[in-house]
Length: 181
Image (cartoon, rainbow, N blue to C red; front, side, top):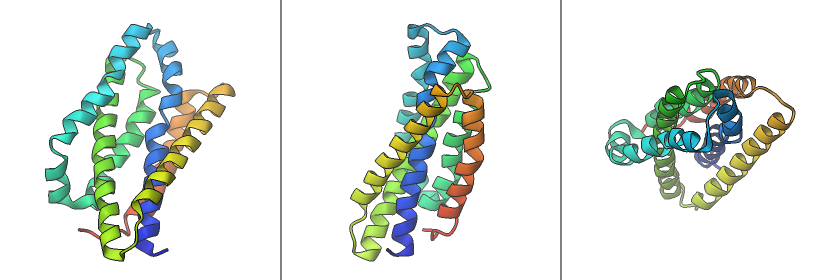
């Protein structure tokens, strides 16, 4: 597998680990903030609002800065907002953090799909299906990790704050060497 193909597959895996980490900890955040199901539902609207608002601007942003720079700028937002959500325990803070999380998720998701398409064109080899399969495996693994830690009563702040530096280092190892386009 070429370096470009390896990197894009690894990026999809990293994205999944970052994106899925918070989902298993939502019940813990609900309990910690004393939110009812309805209140939690309103707070969770922040994530799709952030994601949907980015769809309007994603093409222009990725065209201007390229996939590599875009990913390096916004995937850390996904990682950091998830960690901060476990320590800034207020519904308004969670709504805002989830909005930024959604923004980072959607923009990095679009940018890495653009990059995967570019890798396919440059190498002549199909990689998109592998990327999405690896993303699914990464999401499953981060979900299993979160569920296991939750079952072991590990505090969500310990879980996500310990995971954040690992994910940022992994992101840098995978993305920094990618070509600037």
